[in-house]
Length: 502
Ligand code: SF4
Ligand code: SF4
Image (cartoon, rainbow, N blue to C red; front, top):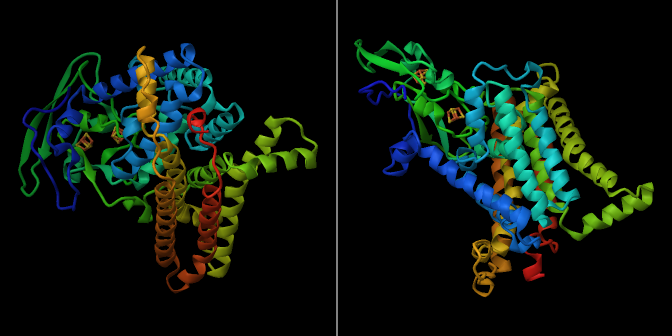
């Protein structure tokens, strides 16, 4: 570990939120060198249990850990954690354990190709995951889900062994991409205490790491905030050190959670104790103009994910099957693969692109800003406002599955360990009226949050023409919310719990 002895808390005059890592017990655990490892080890053991049960256990979805855990419980808890705390799943991600080993082996490895350092692969992998989920009925197959988990371990290990940065997390992983996008709504963020300290920091260990094969010692002169004096601090790099930020974020420049896996490596690597996890207003970055890069891939990732929320829910209601049949009859396509590819291709990719470009075009026309702003820049400005409505749709969907059978995991675990599952006690469901209220609140919350963001963006960019600028975006959010509500009021398949409640 490369922390300098006697490092003090140095803060400058910025208003920082509450330091989460100063909380008793939890803060100490997270700061501790092996804190994350404990969390990861527990999740890795859980993932291995899922694989074992998926490959050798009962192949009934509702009775197998491999299907009940990821498709019913995991998703519900992930959206709750993102909303209330932050990107906890990436923090404890089991797939990064073999990755860490691979990464240490790859320190002399190559950078991820420049052309691929964007979110296009992430959009593709999210599309592929949701497509395969539907096409292969992954929720109904413990065996296939187990293989999916194994494929995840393999892919993350290979990619981290080949490349120096955490390319899998940042550019490929669909689960991570979901978490990274919606952690932008979370109430926590990595920040530095003092920018003055960063300005004189020699090693920039938060991004470069403090890990070295052989011990190396140097002395840093660090300013004492509020005084002209400096403090001499010894910095040690060595085999006990920490790798720097895997997604290559530089702590003093972080404005967004977009690529932060909350691994806290920067906290452990900083020799000056200058980085921590702070509380903030939920979604604070979404209201700032400079938080996100103005890139097509980033904008379309956020928009596509919101539309994927709609199509994913739509795939579980009767009109979806009617549409499938009509398309098959109308176009004469008998292959389910092709029909599904067509529906998902249109709803998940073409629609967000067409809607985003059209709304940007209209906003530029209505405000006469078409000479000043490109379509790309206009889309990038409004893209953050798609995060809340998208999250609201996913939250409404995932909370439905969780609340329909919140206790089911107990008898499944009992049976996994060879006991008798107490299905009678644990097969309860939260009242349909309460689930409906939660879904409605999630949709309304997402809608009004998005509207507020879009209004602020419009005021910032177009001032008195803001009411014209917002019109296309308001229409989109209204249509998305209405479509989602229509879907959630239809009878929805209770995937993973069907055998018990159906
Ligand atoms: S966060 Fe720490 S390691 Fe990074 S630049 Fe600042 S002082 Fe240096
Ligand atoms: S090292 Fe720090 S900034 Fe980078 S992903 Fe981990 S927690 Fe986020």
